[in-house]
Length: 138
Image 1 (tube, rainbow, N blue to C red):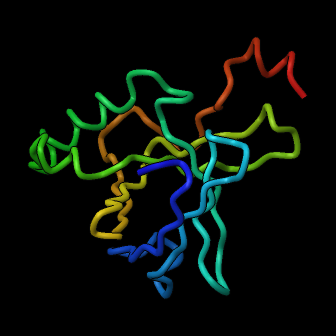
Image 2 (cartoon, rainbow, N blue to C red):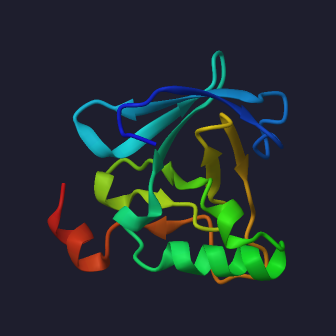
């Protein structure tokens, strides 16, 4: 998916806590190739990022987990782009990412789903920036 692509996506199953919403618009943020919006009309708006921007090695761990625990094969996984939901903070350096529940977006089929990585070491709040960068930014 290119960074300039806007898509209307069907979320199946819906995001936890937002079961009544199944349609979102995926929007790149102008002049910022690292972040995207996932926006529901008359609903929530989530900030997203790709894991490779902030968490090297995460994608390989996710692929391994999905192949082992869910039975997905690597060809199937290649059709899905992986994104993380960001929790905003008063200070940008304190933003966190949900590594426990990554979002998978299939731009060709215009589908999206969140998969919870049970029995992993991931949590819903991993800092985007390491401690030394958090002290020096913003």
